[in-house]
Amino acid sequence: MRDGMVYRVDKPVDMRLLREERDSAGYVAGYPILEAGSIGRNEDWLASFKTILAKPTNYPRSQSGSVIPLSEHIVRLWGEGDSITVTFGPELSSFGLKFSSGVRIRGRLEEDREAMRGLIQAALHPAK
Image (cartoon, rainbow, N blue to C red; front, side, top):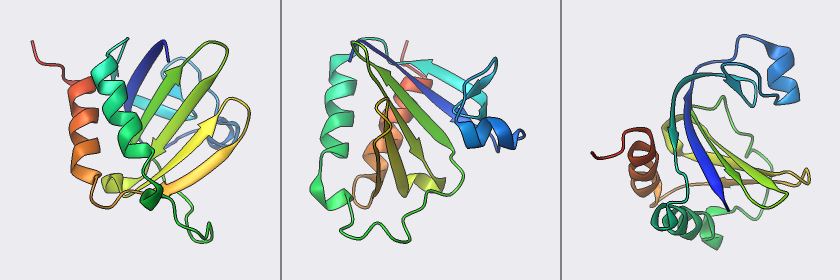
C-alpha cells in the first residue's frame, strides 16, 4: 500500500450515500467524518494492521449473522490501482473488508481488539 487514512465516523445522515458507500466532501463510504488521521507510508503501522487482519481465527466459517452494524471507524488504504476499505463496528468487535474489485469479507476481532484500538488511536492522535 502506498498511502492510508483512518477515520472516526458518525452515524450516517444520507442513506443514499451510505447504500452507495460513496465519498463526498466530509464523508467517507457514506459516513460523516468526525476525525481523520493519516497513516501515510508508516510501514510499522501497516505491518501491525496486516498481522491482525491476516489471522484466520478472525474470520468465521459461516458468514451468516456477521453483518457489520453501523461503523465507528473506517480505515482506507490505497495501493497501485487498488484500494481496501475496512469498516469497524462498535467497540471494534466486527469488521468488514471491501476491495476495489468489489470482493467483501467479514470478520470478528476477539483478542486483537485492544491492539487494533491502539493502532487506530495512534493514527488519529500521533505522538509528537
